[in-house]
Amino acid sequence: MRRDLMDILACPICKKELTLTVTKEDDDEVITGNLNCAQCKEDYPIEDAIPNLLPPSLRQA
Image (cartoon, rainbow, N blue to C red; front, side):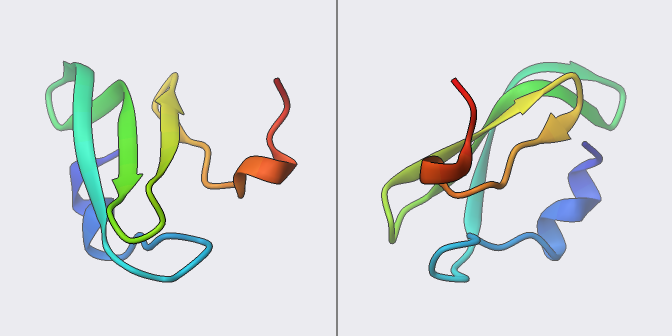
């Protein structure tokens, strides 16, 4: 996921701003990490540079 996507990403539940936590990064690309919504208290994982913004009830385990 490119860092500049943070300007347009929003929580899929409440549409509020997300906070990025990076675990692994390559140049300007986030490889693994987490997006967090302070309003909903939900976390959205980033794996293989792809953010999973599905609501928790629709994610596969």
